[in-house]
Image (cartoon, rainbow, N blue to C red; front, side, top):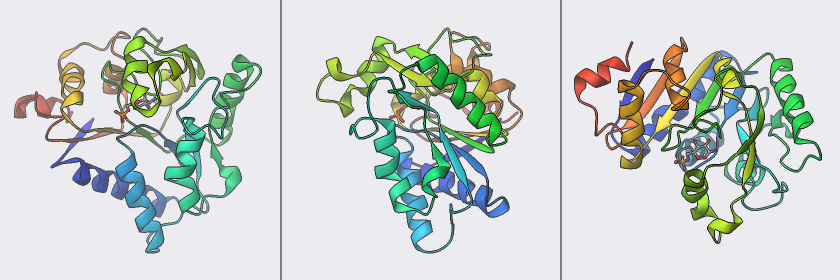
Length: 251
Ligand code: GLP
């Protein structure tokens, strides 16, 4: 893993956008694994600005998103489909048929999971997977206890994840109970992974990634086994780590 220290959220966002930009410069038809949540909004804004000033294009690229809520149609303002459209897709030049998310309203979620996993493989795999991180170490919606070899599947969200995401809904009761997510195995197949963390709320989980053994109880610990992971974290997210600990993230 390689740790890039950022001063603050803005700096983290800029550094993340620059990495995505360089992936597209080297491989215009790259497959980007995209994420939702608050952390990636800054990077998306900067990518849009770079697109507008002509310094990058998504025309030949394709994207696959990590996850989607079960039961929310694509036009629901809290669906990840809607989020991606509002915060990135409609502002840049991705071809409409080259951006993909799991379908949270498919009749048969198991079949949909299989279709999505095959789709990722059919695209040749993910060149760069962008990840945020849950306070409990979840990546995508892979909650603690998810098998490391899991493919795309349906998950029951933990109460803590529903509570963390309730800020986007009118009340916690409206947060769906289930989601469909790439599995840990799907994520680990990515050629490169870019994990972003900002704010004191993420300090505890970054500390655990450093100190704890690799375990399904803390899904993000598996990233220590991937040969090509970059973590960009800001000072607040790194506030529980001293310089020796940070070195451990640079191995
Ligand atoms: C959700 C998403 C994750 C995301 C996490 C952190 O649970 N499914 O992909 O990483 O939230 O979100 P935030 O960036 O808002 O802290």
